[in-house]
Image (cartoon, rainbow, N blue to C red; front, top):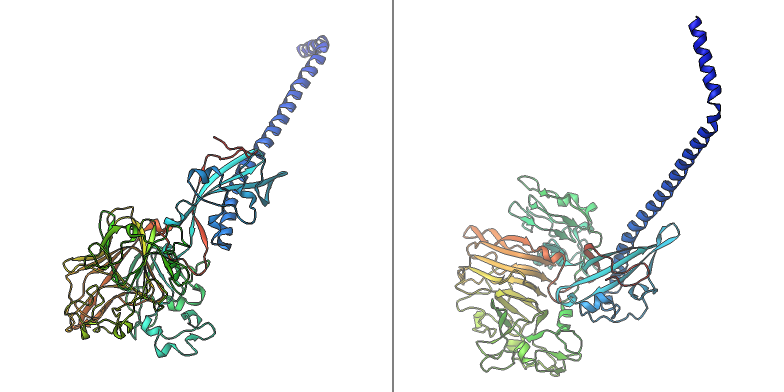
Length: 609
């Protein structure tokens, strides 16, 4: 125990001896705590500042995207808004874009320090508003249908910039596009001209989802449907209700409106075999795409008083043979003027170097060998019927037979280009595509190099040489781009004899390009006559008002006839379009690509080098 007491006493003495040190310890601890508090406060303030900077940085990018959406909405409201911008904007100057100031000032077009910005009212960071300004590059719009927009967003001291590609949402965004899933002959037949099937208020055929019953009897009664041999390696779109037995769809599948037609979409009536294969569940598009009534807007692009970079106008049946060196041979004996002006085409100018010289001498359009000229780069060719007005510069008096607009072999008549062939019977099929004597028909074939569109007021024919095993039109170079637009139809030329035998050696028809039939269909001449011939091998797109068959399984001597289909989507058409290609009746625009680049401006509006 003594030992215990002694130890306690020793401890007490040490406490009394060290009591003078307590103030020093308290002061030291207090200093340390104060340092920690100050440090913690500084850290909290820095963290808050960093968090606010992060929020501003992110919001600046959102503001740049808001600028893209603002410009896109202006385009959708006014499809001519692409012409507007700031002529002094560096992005426009560097691209040589001839933009003009809009009639109503747009604050987002400003580029000067301390100038105006567009505001994103719903986006703020603290008390800082999000804002944007943008610049336009339209150098490729008329040639390729693409606008590039550089949009800079700013919040506080942070700025970020994106570059977007913007194009019109149209037919070429899809490998396959249709307005009606019905044969044209059925649509025009008596069965479809009833109150059940015809919308008399709008003078148009009803869609199946509106209650139409005609043309929906497939496959029992022979109208069109998709079967096991139909494979689509690209986006599919229809305003109607497709009849799908067991096709394969390896990309998106859009129909209008999806909610009302699943029973018709999936295995209609007596379909056999496996169910259809969809890589992506069928969907309804956000906005319907509507065809314009005609392709007359494309003809406008040949008027030198209206169009920028006007194209070439040809009259009456015209043939165009493309060559791999970027030239084409044009034959068009009815043509008198290739660029016109004035309503009713009452004026003309000589553009022989660009479009070929009218006349019948050597290397002129009316000569049997035609005129060889460069393709009309970045523009188009439009083929019209011979006009009926004597004041039109392309008017030529026509005989009664020619005015009948029908040239066939029965009476020995020809359309001036050699159609129909000797020994051909153009009236053999159950569906006829007559050769017109003076109609706006164009026959195209060969190897195409360049960027151009071809449009016909009547039929656009995909022709071939008699000796070819693969006919049609192909790209000579990978960068080429061709648009093919027929008002009544785009027809694969496939002549037969009176006995129903094939006249050509063609085994396949190759088509590189974007095909569109405004009032008809993509068709095969004599699809139900002659022995079956390979496939239509398409690299591009096909869009049509109606859906006609390309082959018949039990037509020629109890066997197959016509051509199968092998369609591959040209994915470039998501971002660019053939020059002056026809657009939907209601124009909408879509940003197809958006990428961030270095900031173009600082927060005060100064251009950053």
